[in-house]
Image (cartoon, rainbow, N blue to C red):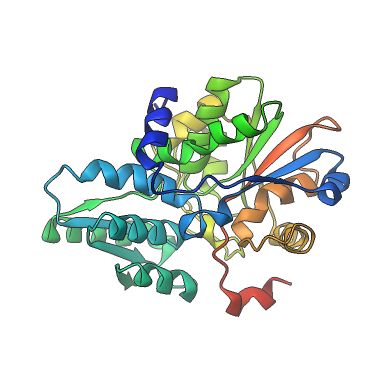
Length: 318
């Protein structure tokens, strides 16, 4: 499990690598929901997403090991974060990316100096992971898992104390969910500091293993996932390490449709002028659609997890 000591240590470890993005409020979006809504702008984070927090905490721990570099499997943001941190710390990085990932995310990883290998189907994740394991042995590369690693979880969890320091009377925190690293870290931090705060996870309908795993209390692998605009959290598996933490600290995980995500995305772009990717819009989509029920006037923090938008696809969102 991950506790406050690990998260505190992670804050010290990554302090010189990451930003501390602000919380934004919006009167117009608050009125739409009947609550006080705040947005943690991780789209303004280094590499454009929260992922750099976990990657920095993990990769910095590898500097003392005899490794020739790092390798990961990623549908986008984690790959960029791994490439950036490895480049900053002068370590080679190999990023394995399944077919269909937006070109902007691939090019960003390459721009940080990583070798990017594109191939494989996210619906058959075992094959991609197997090839990554082979390469890690062949090249003496350390694996940086996208979510199922205690150092990754602790790194993502550093968002929790930042929210509570800036918004100490927050009633609920709503988090996008893919493999579970982000919500595991945030929920542990928030609940251990203030158990009264409710924590919700939100994923895309039909493509959220974490929602199924949370319900059944065991890792559930999805082999036939629909496409979704929220490709950044279209994840077929929930972590074996993340799931027990999620079960311990998260109140509920729900899913939202693409139509609900797009409505939320449009409002965020138009009303608070923050360019975020669809995956980042799922927390507000859950509020807007009424799928999360909270008392009127509740103070709610939504995590805007990333802003790496493929502008060539943006017209298709609306």
